[in-house]
Image (cartoon, rainbow, N blue to C red; front, side, top):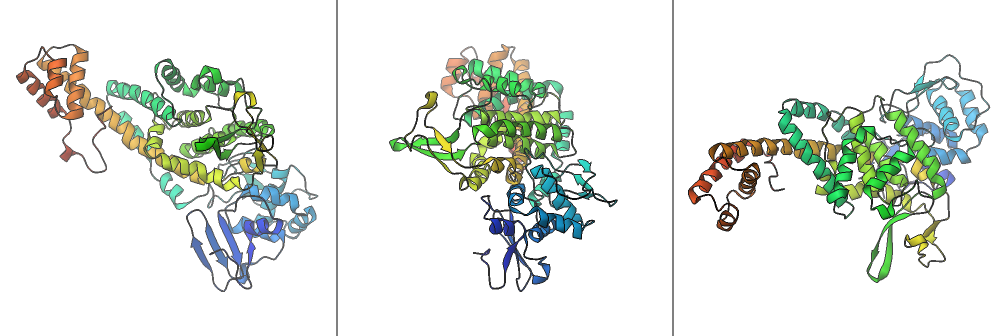
Length: 524
C-alpha cells in the first residue's frame, strides 16, 4: 500500500492526529508522511499520499502535526474537532505563545475556540495582519468576517454546527472556468419569448417526472401538478424554516406519510432482499442530533446566500447537507433536489422563469449520482456502531418497518464532511442539463412550432390534429399506413405525403448539427 510507513517515517498532519489519538473518523483526503528519502506524491482515486523529507518535520507532537496540516493540507474539521478533545490545552497555548504572530498558530488557536466553544488562556492577538482561516488556494471560501481576537478572517462556508468543506481540485477549477451561466443567458436572450415559455413549461413537467422516477415513483395527476406548482414558486421557499420544509414534504409525499415536522426517531436508507433480509445503505443522524444539525443547516443557508461563492457550489453544499441529515422519514431526496433549484434561482444563476431539469441529468447517469452519495455514506459507515432494535429482531415501530439503534456518538460525521465529490458531481449535472435538456427543448419547440405552422398553412386543420401529425413525423420520419387510415382518414395519401415533406423540411438536417450539438430528443 502506498501509505504504508517505511523505516524512519511517520504520519504527520491530519493523518498524524488520526493515528496519534485513534480518532474514529474517515481518513483525510491527503495523507502526509515525513521522513522519506525523497519528496513524492501518489494520487489515487479519492486521496493522495504525500511523502516529505525529514526537514519538513516540525516535531513529533500533536500541536506540530496540526501546524503541518494547516500549512500543507486541505482542512478536515471532523479530524480537528475530535483531535481538540484529546489535545492538551497547555500544548496549544504554548505553541501560540512561542509564535504569537505566526499564521498557523493563530489559525490553530482560532479553530480550537471556534470548534469547541472553549477559550484558551491567551490574551487577544496583537496588531498583526489578518490571515485567512482556510487557505483560499486549497479551499472554496467566502469573504467572511474578521475574528479580532485571533486576527483571522473567518472565511468558512458554515458554522461550528454544520461546516462542509470544498477542496479546490483541478476538476472544481475547471468547472469554475466553464462560464455556464453566460451560456444560459446567451441561449435565453436569443430565444423568442413564446418559444422559451413553451419550452420551460415542458421542462417543469420533465423535472417533476424525473425527480419522482429517482425514488421509483410515478408523478401523475394531482401529485404532479402540486409539485410543478411548488417548483414554480421555488424562490418563495424558505429553506431555513422547519414549517416551510414540512410544507414542501407534504406536497411531495403521499398524504398518508406527510410529516408534521422533523423526525424524532432513528431512520436509515436500505432495501429488502430475498428472504426478507434488510440491507442498510446509509445510517442517518441520531434523532437527538437532528435539531442542532438543522439549526446548523439554517445558518449555512443564511451564510451562503448572497456570499461570493459560485451558485452551483453553494447549491451542492446546501442540498447534500440536507439529504445527509435526512430530517424526514420520506421525501428527503426530492427536497434535496428542490433545494438545488431554490439556490440556483435565488442566486440569479437560473434566468427568471426558467428551470434546469437537473433530475433528467441525474437519471441519465444514476450510477454517478449513487456514487456521489456513497462517497459519503461509505466513508462514515465503519464509524457508526448500530444494531437492530430489540436484539436483532426487526421491530415494526409505528408501522415504519425494521428499527435500528445507534449506540455511539456520530454527530461530527454529519457536521463536518468533505463536500468536494458532491460539488464536482452537481456541477457536471448542471452543465449537462443546460447543454442538453434546456437547449434541446428550446430547439424542439422552435422546430415543432415552425413545422406546425407550415402544415396549417398548407391545410387549415385543427391545432391538435396538426400537432399530432407533426409529432408523429418528427418521431418516426413518416406516418405508417395504419395510422394514416386511423388518425387522418380525411386526408388523401398525396396530402399526407406532402405534409410529411413539409415537416421534414422544417426539421434540422443531421449535417447541420455537430457531434457536440445533438439533435433534439423529439420522442417524448
